[in-house]
Amino acid sequence: MTTSKPDPATVVPASGDLPTRAADRIDPDAVLDLASRLVRLRTVHDRPDSPVEQPAADLLAEVMASYGWDVTVTDMASGRPNVVAVIGGSAAGRTLMFEGHTDVVTEGDSAAWSFDPYAGDIVDGFLRGRGAADMKGGLAAMIHAARAVEQAGFAGRLIVAALADEEGMMAGAKAFAASDLARSGVDGVIVCEPEAGEICTVAKGALRIAIDYIGVMAHGAMPRMGRNPIPALGPLLVGLAELERQLQHSVGPHPELGEFYVTPTIVAAGGTEQLNVIPAVATLRLDVRTVPATPHAPLLLLLERLAREIADEAGLGCRFDVIDDRAPVETPKDAAVVLALAAAHREIVGAEPVFGGVPGTTDGTILNRDAGLQTVVYGPGGKWIAHQADEMCDAADIATAARVYAEAAERFFAGRW
Image 1 (tube, rainbow, N blue to C red):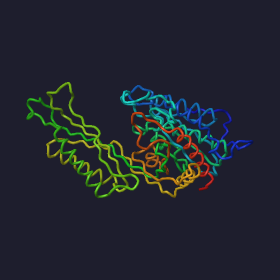
Image 2 (image 1 turned 180 degrees about the horizontal axis):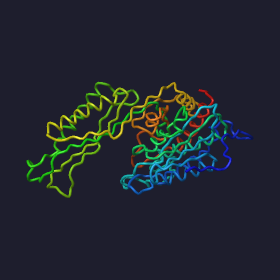
Image 3 (image 1 turned 135 degrees about the horizontal axis):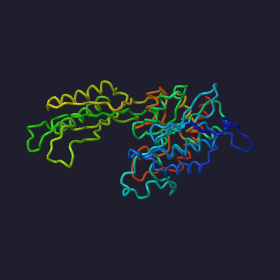
């Protein structure tokens, strides 16, 4: 679905008493109002029939269309749309993209929160609620930054993308990366995730791996009549921990990304309703976080060999499946989008930028992997607060991020850094 107003104003020249610099056109109250409205929307994927991102997508599409932008809403699944706006279109200029996601993780146990998980209010200078940092504050900042850049006037093309399913399998980013727009010449992407104001040109890679050990079901009183797959998970977990330790020692910590990790996240077998049954299958799921010194192909060979050797010793079958494979991101620090962002940070914040790394993966990982786009991650909110109870974000940081984004875009289009 595409929505837009007639005669959209793609470039509005500065006039009258309005500031000529885009960053000075940012209205902090308007940025925070949009961020608050977004946080109040529970855009969580916690059941198959939930609309997830739809409420936030509707709000953002309405805001974007009110500016006269060319807005496209594309469903990834029912209630899970991407919202993408294209502003400008000068063939002579560069193309910059602002990117964020509209889904959030569940609030978990509400009793663990000291306030309503979807309060969306500002108390003592902090926006409070799930998604305040990750990443509805960043979404609001990038949309108002794009509007300010448009009003100040620019030569080029600005893409504003609010994508679905970042907290899951990144279906929104995968769909965008496969689109004609992604392949039409995007020169740089600013991913507006919370990184405490650090400029993150590198991001960890991720491997999601499923290992199933397959035995023979039997009565618990007659274990010799079956083959129990559960005990083999013990040596497998020990072996994985040792492999992690050896690789950490071999490659050392990355200066901005830290250590390589192999993390078991799911162990499952049998069911509580039948305690007297040896299950046929025992399941392990792994979340592997890699650094550039741990290339995925040889690592996968090591992991699979370990899993199969232990299964063979126990007389079990083994299924080893790679659910997703996301390589680390390494964007050069002299890339135009990075230089423009660093210059904007100096100008707006008044300090030298700190360069860091993303400890997880973002939609930028997919945009880089699938479409070859140069991505850099920068946004308001603490790097380590995401997915925790009592999530909050400094309101001043959200407004500052909007100004930095606007300044970065102007510099990017002008080739001035």
